[in-house]
Amino acid sequence: MTPNTCAHNLCDMNITLSIDEKVVRGARKAARAMGLSLNELVRAYLRSIATPGSAEQDIEELRSLSLASKSRSNGWRFNRDELHERS
Image 1: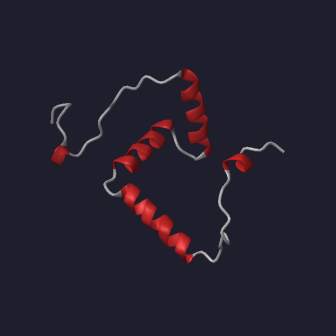
Image 2: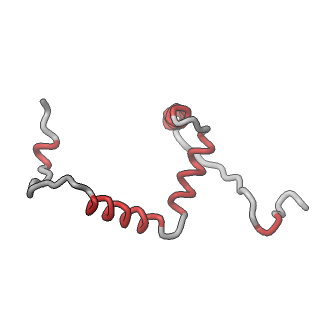
Image 3: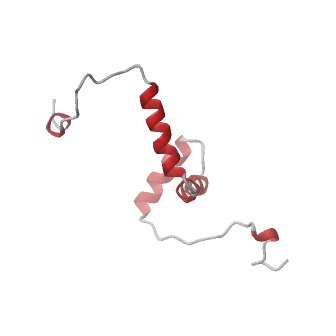
């Protein structure tokens, strides 16, 4: 196979990104805390947003978990001002 040929059209593609150095340092630190390399973290993220139906599945799971929950708000709703109050 030549360098750009992949068996069965399944191969990893190298891409180049331009990202602020501070962002990369912070992302590497976060990835390490998760036991991943920055490359693994980026791959996992891209895979998660590229998966067809992923968002719909997440929304359906949230609805299902919400309906199954025994917790109830008793009519309480979030209030933006209360959420941003400083103690």
